[in-house]
Length: 295
Image (cartoon, rainbow, N blue to C red; front, side, top):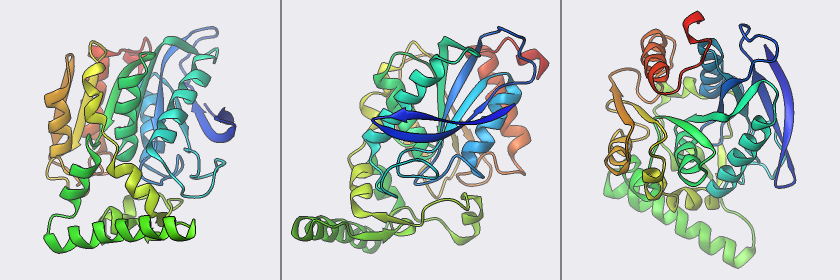
């Protein structure tokens, strides 16, 4: 069952879809997941939708939603800030905890890419989060960007754009805009994995927000709650080393899975049967649903 709904976050109305497994019995309270979409992405026609549908089939309630300024949610279009997204995730948890289908003590968080970084950070600062599953996330924005702009030429161009944007904002009060692909390069053949509803231009302030965002600083706080760091090996979009660095700082129980599969999109159709089975095996051990055996 999928239900379209909205909830409030800092006075803004956020658009969401609630997934409830068909096997839920009347009155039964199930474990749940908040699902965070990726970089200026969407809850719809995206990795977030695939993740939410996967969690539903695994026996969890799932809430996928558009962060403020993205998709169908309120907020100035594309004016994304990392700590605003953490606030949205916390408010999503508060909303989900009040649903009659959900066990409020067993709400996890998951996300892909930027959504994974937000998920790890949220779990690190909000002990209501009972479990975290990070897919191709990152722990240090500056380090991530350096990995995404590995040559001196590309790094100088990227930082030059950021500095120009900062100056432009100071002088005019207006944002300087840049292509999302100038911030986070994605090879042409992999762009088909993006949501058609994803935003293609961002203000430079969004890139600065990401540059200064460090899930590394709080990932160690998640333990003893379970954490899975799932990443594609040889990821050419978000460097695989980002999940390795987070694993080094994390407590236990934490598992790191590096999967040799489609770069950055582990739930792409050709890989999903295997990658979903790996995630389900981890969830069955560390954060099981009573409906798991039926899925």
